[in-house]
Amino acid sequence: MSRSMQEILDQADALAEAFENYEPNPADHRDPAPLIALREAVSARAHAEANLAEAVTEARRHGYSWTSIGALLGTSEKQHANATDPTPKPPSKRNDTEL
Image 1 (cartoon, rainbow, N blue to C red):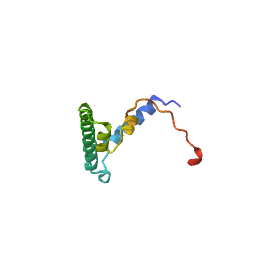
Image 2 (spheres, one colour; image 1 turned 90 degrees about the horizontal axis):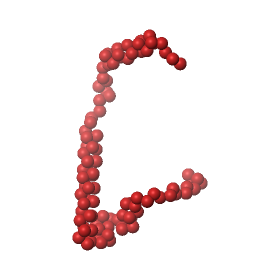
Image 3 (spheres, helix red, strand yellow; image 1 turned 45 degrees about the horizontal axis):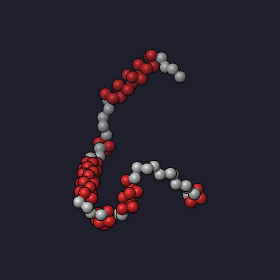
Image 4 (cartoon, helix red, strand yellow; image 1 turned 45 degrees about the vertical axis):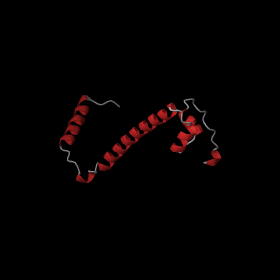
């Protein structure tokens, strides 16, 4: 359904008027502190993960086994291999009766 040029201009004027007359509702204001804290936590986690990866690399470079490293990380060599294996895994077969 096409609109005439006048309908488009009228809608543009109505939108401009609504925008110009907009007054924010104070009840809509939310404290940004929780999102700021979340952003900082995500950043800290990223730095910690980078430090951890570097420490693992250094430990391996110095001859420490995956068993020793895994014990400190709370994981195993197999779990690490599975997590870092770039080979695509076939989709698991889902049993629809389990839903």
